[in-house]
Length: 232
Image (tube, rainbow, N blue to C red; front, side):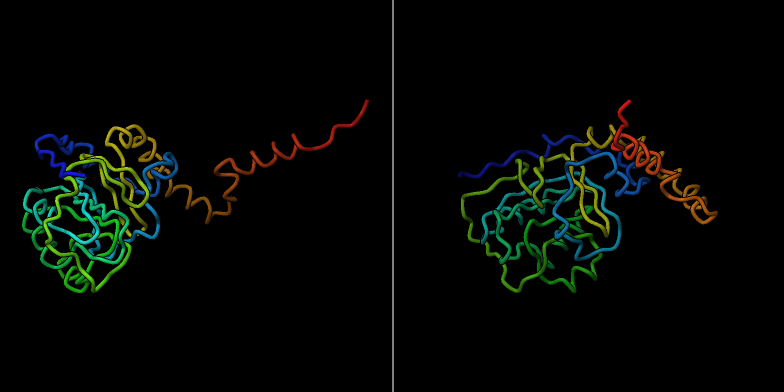
């Protein structure tokens, strides 16, 4: 396929109020309300300790060639998260110390590689949140293969990703979804988080978890429905 490069100006901006509110929610709480958007659990944070919130800038490369990623690293800005689709390859690392320094210099929020990275000690020293399936000494090269795409639909961790999607990550994993989809459940998730301390306090006061969440009442209803009825 020929190169498909779309202008950064075509990306929807990261809505500042939504980004701020998202930083207030426990990302795992969003898992109570969503099923889609959660990346493969094996795609883990290998560098950085901060929670990740940012706008996806997507890059699709061929397995051995990171030319397009180097180009993209000079275009990102504050709040951007580079999401790299490596075409299924998990041997060649397209992202290492130099690329991450380029991202840090541009104010990027983080990087996600649907593959492996390298120079992990240097990446950890830089502190930028980086997610990958692992590390490798084998790296990509600058072959200039006329294939790949920038700000095109990609796949990452089994999740379809479009440029401009919201990328959320912490020590538990990654969630990538359209901003509007996350906004639709954010109020409920924040309300859940606000209730959690009182629930935990009641647990230590002796209340059973199932009573507090309604699970026990549901089990009792299920048992009643399954109980045999007596013939008149």
